[in-house]
Length: 349
Ligand code: SAM
Ligand code: FES
Image (cartoon, rainbow, N blue to C red; front, side, top):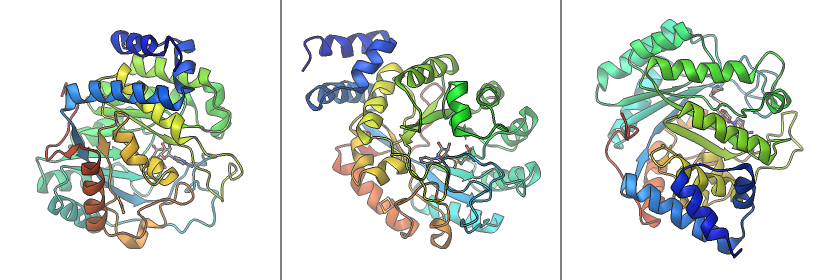
């Protein structure tokens, strides 16, 4: 272990801040050093969340998307993607299944699908909230206007996930066509926060052209935004995208960054993502042991799961919701953590 590594971690933990040089030194740390990093992340996480892990039932309700992000398997140019939409009844059925399995949050995620206009989304959200008033509804349906977000909030949506993908505009333009801008995505996040949502931003680790400098800028942006959730997972190439030959993001670097984010944002909700579980069969367990405290088991009907393929090799595409639920509960318990039966709002909410 480098002589000053412990002092470095202690400083980041105490200051809840980091310099560019410190970030590079920590992301690059050795196996021996990372144990100290993870241990500190767990101590911080445990002091806030008392070893609780929150489950969110993920409903992937449409894979139609009008956008063409270079990394994403459901981009509009991918003619091989078999498109589907769930009906409102199917979505409500997923919620019934999720409620029976003990989930207190439903996450509605989809491509940017114009079929689901504001009225349809509001109708779905309010129908869920009518039936399950005590449950949280999270939306993850991309960039919309301030007014649309306000309608969703007024219909009862509690939270919104919108990864900013990268805070650096030039890097953003290497991952997206010119019709999309990082500036608009960041503004969306600010709008969501102002409206009153619990807001999640985030990035993929190891996207093409990403540098340490970019990740540092991501942390600066997060410090400014003060999100309630931060979603990070490794980039994984999809065979039908322009990035098909690009190397996947590293599991180690993802775990190092998860732990660092826990030190800098002690109270933030931090998922151990499906992408992490895809890149490493024990990735989600390792994520919890590096400071993550949220898992999002899949609630989508089995017949559509293998169609919501953002990247190659995605796990949990053949299992029923009940199987994923049991599997995840066992996996969480194997880490010494326990599944919480609360909604798992951000501690300040
Ligand atoms: N359309 C919504 C949006 O843009 O936020 C939600 C769906 S979008 C597919 C959800 C997230 O999947 C993206 O924010 C991105 O970070 C992640 N993602 C897409 N392609 C990926 C890939 N190849 N590897 C890992 N994560 C990916
Ligand atoms: Fe889906 Fe393990 S979480 S099979």
